[in-house]
Length: 344
Image (cartoon, rainbow, N blue to C red):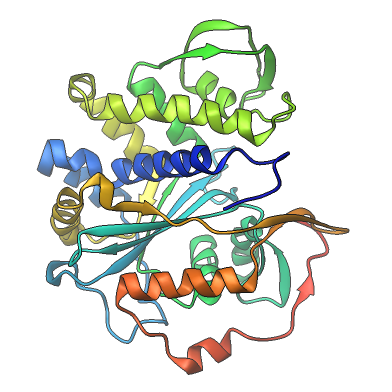
């Protein structure tokens, strides 16, 4: 993905950041099971939610038979105890092929300008959850359908993590150590202003979230924020797969269990873990694409992905999933569009 040089970090830095975010989310969902096996089953059973078969599928995916499948990884900005009060802050579509032992990842910009499913509205994709609530369809389901309509692929599963989950995971793993390069302030989710002075600092969960979220205090904007995210996420991955993660297993599973949900059936977890175990890191590929910023009077600053790029990404997903979309389904995604009266 590339934007102009003033707003976006270099290609390699962005690619590595996206990979780390995706790997962290995958670890939260299935990776810990590699080390602890059946102990995670209780957590998965408690947090599992049903997701109906995609309308883009004629038959349901069977993980035990190594069917290729997709997982939508959702990071939310939930700021209150209300589980329905959130927007998507991170969207990563993972296309998994157990036959080729590979995963292709597409990181979808939160400000991607799209037509929202079940509406005639075109606005930022992070508004899809709100429109799903308004229409009575459901937040995740509306995000799912919006992305399916764009790339013409089924979304078979999802896993969703909120801000509180990030904070709790950092605390469960004993915090993180960072090196603050420039002074800045950032208000925590609870309202407290946190001051960061230059130099080494040990951060707890709320402090770590404030540290990785700030972007307005620096001329570099997203570049500086992505660098801090990479710094923290790398530590979390290392801690989760270390002896330290083993000794703090109970705290980690509690943080995960209270702050994320997914649509995997309890009986599918062993096959999911086995699939993930067999995929080497070098076979987890982040697919890059061209995009550019644009401003609209009502929706503000948005991200545009050219139609040719969307078509290319769709072809990559179709090949990875060994999937051919139905022409009638593609035709159904076309229709009248209007710009949103406001970004929700």
